[in-house]
Image (cartoon, rainbow, N blue to C red; front, side, top):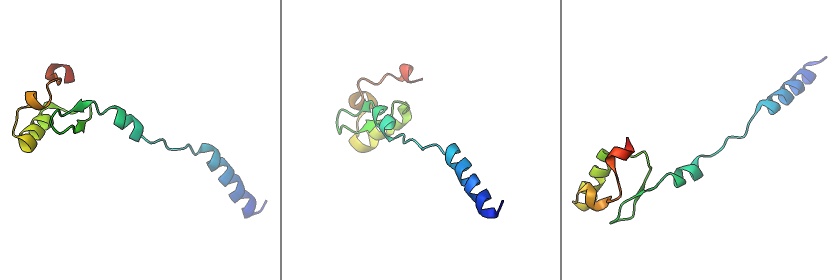
Length: 77
């Protein structure tokens, strides 16, 4: 058996093992369910209160309750 046959066999074996990479973009878009009521910016559901507070203060000079009235800090933990 020559080296060409070995290379072909290796390519066949590797082709079987290769799995198609799946993108998480669609699932990330679905997970963005926290929305600022003022500018309509969306945030991932895993976003914590300090980030939302930073957004509310820096962008709108308002409190987290005014920008994100449906956000419940106790439920986010």
